[in-house]
Structures are given as structure tokens and as C-alpha cells.
Length: 405
Image 1 (cartoon, helix red, strand yellow):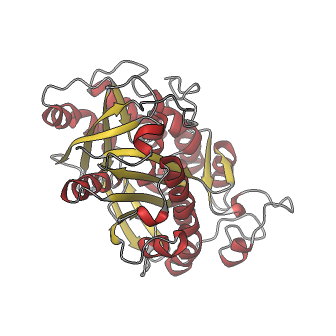
Image 2 (cartoon, helix red, strand yellow; image 1 turned 45 degrees about the horizontal axis):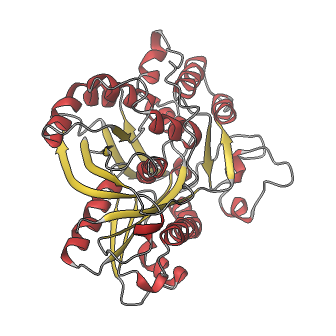
């Protein structure tokens, strides 16, 4: 029996960042010149993002209520409002403190929605590229959720934005190898820990789109689990991976002295636009998905996928909605999108796409299966605001920055 995603749980930190506020903060940094200020405005305004979340409340004005203990350990701004540049060690220490609770919150939500008890979990697969420690998030989930001590653990680290699909592929393989397997997949990213003031267009783009969040999925082929009968599920079909013919230097993720450094050149959406049809065509092999879940690396990535595959204007509504309200949460984002698509017509075919360093294209084909009984729908991220409106297009020296997001 094929493995299914029985439920998806999500979690975001309590601090919500209005896009305009973060834009103005970066644009008002001391010593910034007019061109850099224009680059900041172009990138942030073209991102098609309204709000994002962060584990750091220090990005918001101190109103006496937003300050937390975390801010004293990881200050964001100095007394004059200038962005600080903590060391990589300090940033990672904050990841060690703040990431595990977010992993656990998403995992608890997924287990509750699937009506799966902690002691039924047999395998844990964790995903993250924004921090490193050992024993890591997989170990912490065993301790924090009270999972069996003998649970098998796997961690996909530093794979980037595309990692959730390989994690689901691993969960599917584990379920095929062990008919009793109940796999908990959890992706958690704290991208905002690596923000920094910079005149580098690539760092400006990163600051304009990335955000914090976690998502978890319960995957199993067991026919007796309650999650198969209390709500719709997503049956996992085939998976695909391909490398584009170029792009190794255009999307990269490295560790610097002042945090992790994202390389995201203007060529990324162009490469995706040029190669997406061939990459996805080979994977689909004649299948015609009716619904699409595409990782929103940025607004222009979605635009290029839409045009490259000749999709309908509303085909990526769920992806655009998650981008608008949550930004790019790296690996966790595609699970946020799939969560909004759990309810819908039975037997509908869904295609999921995500893009990572390399440039790597990860694909998955899923089929929505209805629950035998009517149940209250999972509260989705609203797609009502996912209108495909064109963000302002910059001209002159700013156009290259706007093209990246």
C-alpha cells in the first residue's frame, strides 16, 4: 500500500514582521548610499510579501512588550537603530536555543491532526539548513515529544530550500521497507538569524524574502491509523531529482564569519524559466497534474515556472498566498503549501516542485485521497489574497535586483 501524508502541522514564531517595516529598516542603515537604498526598496517591493515571521523581536520597535530574553543574548539593533553583525557562533547559539521548540510545536500539531500517539512513531526525519548542532533536532524531538528511545533518526542538513521533498522521498522509502513504519518528517528554518546589513544585491534579496518557520508531516502506509479515516490525505507517488545544466555558482549556501551566506544571483529565475519544461516534462512522463505546489523561492521564480509550464494564472495561487503571508521559509515552505491543498476533490493529482543549490530541481507527484467520513477541514493558509498581480518592476540599475525575487 502506498505511503500517505496523513497530516501536516505548521508553526511560526510569534513575532510578525510587516514587509514595509523591514524594508525601511534596511533602507535607513547608517552609511547607506542612494543606489543601495534604491536597491533595497526595489527588492522588498517586488517580493510580493506582506508579512513574515522571525524568532527575533528586536527587528520591531521596542514598545515595552516585544522585548524578550532572546534579544539580550542576540541583539539585533544598536542604540542608534543600526543592524548589528553577530558572529556565526552567536547566531548558531540562538538557533540551538530557538529552533527545537519550533520543531516540536509543528510536530505536535501534525501528530494531533493524524491522531497518532508519540509512542507509535518509528522513524524521525529532520531537515534544516540554518543552524548546526549535535545531538541535533532529531534527538531533541525524541526528548521533547517523548518518542520511543529506539526510534530511528535521520537528519538532512544544509540541503537548502528543496530538502522537504527528499525528506518525503525518504519517508516513502522507509514506509515501503517497513509496513509498520510511522514516519515523522519535520523541517525547521530560522533564516532571519543570518540577516546582515549589506550593499551586496544578493544579500539584499535574501533579506527581502527569507523568514522563519517549521512544518511537520506524518507519513505512513499503515491502513489502520486513524489519520487515514478522519481527514483527506496525500498519497505519495513517484519522486524526481534533476540538475539544471547551469547554476552551480548562482544558488549556493556557505558559512561565513558573520553568519551563513546565501548566493542568489539574478540568473536563478532565468535558469528555472529556461529549463523547467524539460526537467518537469521528463518527470511527469505524460501525467497532467491538476494542482501545483511550487516552492516560492521568490515572486519571479513563481512567475518563471508559471510561464515556462504554460500554467493557468491561478495555478500557483496557494504558493503565492504562502509567500505573501509567510515569505520564503526555506525547506519548510513547501509543506505549508501542501497543507493548504490537503482538502479538495478526491483522486486529484498534485505536482510539487522545489529548487535548491546546484541548481537542483526536486519533484514529487501526489494524489489526494478522500477520508471515508466527513471531517472538519484543516484550517488552511488563506489563498484569497493570492491574486496574480504584478509587483512594481524596477528600471535602470535596480532592475537586476527586482528580477531575483
